[in-house]
Amino acid sequence: MSWVPRFPEVKANLELTNGEFGSLVSMGAIGNLVALLTVGHLVHKYGARWMLHIGAFSLATSLIFLTHSTSSLLFLIFIILQGGSISAFHISINSQGFFFQDRTKKQIITLLSGFWSSGALITSIIAGLLVDRVSLGTYTNYLSAFCFVAMSYIIYKLSPNLVKADLNPDSDHRARDMFKGFKIDKQVSAALLLVIMLEYAVSDWAAIYVKEDMKIVGGIHTLPYILFTLAMIIGRLNLHNLLPRYTIDFLVVRASLLSGLSFIAGIAAVSIVGNENKTLVIVILSISFTIAGLGSSFLGPSVMNAANTRSKFPSSVVIGQIGVINITLVFVVRWVVAWTAQATSLTIALLIPAVMLLTVPYFAKIFKSA
Image (cartoon, one colour):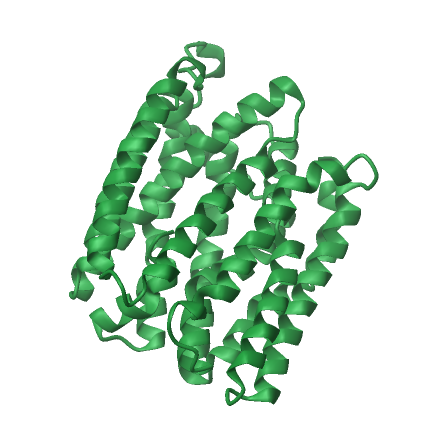
């Protein structure tokens, strides 16, 4: 996540337009897709440890090349590698989460997402503070090295408790089984796309939108993104406090409407105000992004819980199967957002994922069995 707040610098290095840059970044979906089709079965067959080690190494390596590259071709190669690395780590660590959750009956997946968001927030704050102080390449060199060493050590310490290889021949799921038994859960796939696109859009475009459209420069341009992420952390880490009083489908409906409407209201308000009063603009966007982040915080993990409950496959395979469909759809929508921004404006493009959130209540029934 260290390079997300500094996307404007990356885009400038590559000398690309908004549409070209958004399209290139979205090509990471190719790596995502390859990993989602294979890693779930590798985790099931060989265990989680080596997939985590490989994911950590390729994440660190790809980030260094991505933030140094001035070549669109090299950027394309390493964004695909990074996409695969992210999915490999995502499948492995979430399989571990479902493994723990199934045995303890504790709501761990949403908490796991909350801890991920905490790391993203800390990194975003550091990145924002270091804008115009430390070069992008130097920053990511040191951070990648530190994170790789730290992740390797943590994986090593966790090894005794990580998901082991399943040696039971009766439960063997080979790669071809995924295609033979591949079943698209249309409702889950649609719901997951609708609930996560705002997070993707904010990660991809928030810093560029605030800096280039609203003309707010310096580290302050990352503030709405940071507050969005902070709100997601709060929501994810506190969902379990609400579940004894409210059903998950009740919470999903209210939260999706709150998130979508608040985001739309904030974008509309700053469009009316204009970018002359920069203090008012940053206040409006900060409030809007905070509420939107809080509302959308637990939606994605909740859909993944529903997917795992509704499927007969092992959790590692479920994550891969639902991910294949989702990453394909996300790829398409990210292109739509990118080229809408190019053809019209980022203001209009950012409304797309917010409007998508308003349709989530139509899929609330998938959570009733979760």
